[in-house]
Amino acid sequence: MFFAQFLNGKPRPMFLFETKSRTFAEVPICGIYVIGRFWWFVRLIDNKYFISNAYNSSEKEDLEFILKMLKVQKQMIFKMSEDFSV
Image (cartoon, rainbow, N blue to C red; front, side, top):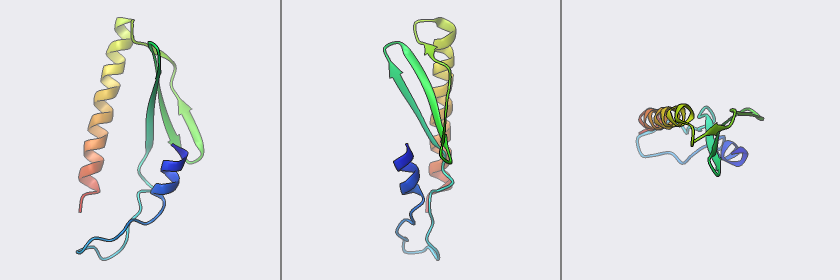
């Protein structure tokens, strides 16, 4: 995640109709890691990691929360792709 944040700070190549180069430094770095039935949601802001509590996918309430979080992540990705399209 830290390396992705570093690469987002570098200017990307300009496209034909762009007047200035852009970076993706303002794009949040989010991640999920899973060990067995436990899920953690992670976000990198500046140089600090924020990690959620573990969610147990074998528990109904936790599984519902995991599904909601995945749907929110999907919406965030679609919104960012619209915001950064040429």
